[in-house]
Image (cartoon, rainbow, N blue to C red):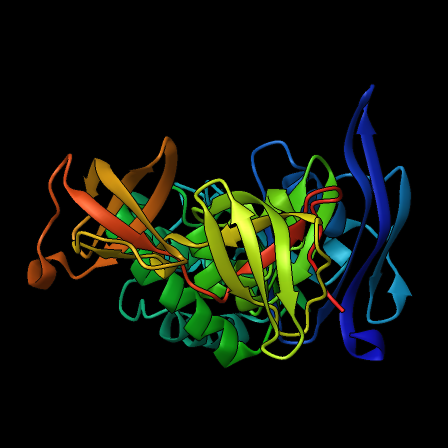
Length: 369
């Protein structure tokens, strides 16, 4: 992002005893961007969040806000506000009292406090609930109160630490859209921390995928999902099928290659990739890209006979495990109401697409020009 970055995390390190929580983490966050730090439990994302807001000191590295290093700036003077996972609302205060708390601490005048609270209640769609006690409103409403309180002092950066984890599944989906709408309205630079891949994919401009204290990949949701840079990212973001293969032949004319995989021979489109005969690779195939057919015979390439080993019905989707010669393929089929649900043991032909993502077997990194 360069000079346009609102916040820069520059080579941040942090250890707790002999445990390295962060190992050289860097990222640029643009003004008005919503970026998610995503990774499994223990990857360092919450530690990084606490360092950004000033609750934890880094061992090395810099946090730079609008071009200024803020490592030694106290949390309450950074212009950064954080929404905690448990909301941390004051149960003895009303909705309005919680939202106005920071304004009172900063000695705003009463009329300005009242106007700001009404503005925020409207923003988070809680008009008329200012006098309610916290225990008199729902979990989703409590989450919006916490958000309004964080926005009250118009921070430069908003940090959201797993803010939806306490909500039920349906409400989480609704609140994702609400959060995104509010964030865009106020155009605030926002960092969202979660271990939920779907949540991060649907809400973010960009993702920072972390693992064991380090950044594995930074990119848009489409880039992360369709072009993972290594095996960890491919497996962490959704389900994935990884096929070991060896390049049997290539064609510059058709920009294709024949790969001898665990299933048999497959033809793949190379695009801008470069492969050599004999090279060992991994072919990355998402479950929704595989098609199932009930025809009796397979084609010459990219189609493999197998049988349904497991069926997981999830309403709009059915996730199948297909046994192809002892190798399991995960396959997603949509709209089972129209297309029906396949039976356990049913014989099928799995059709593998030509357009796939390729990782080099030696380094587990993408095959590029």
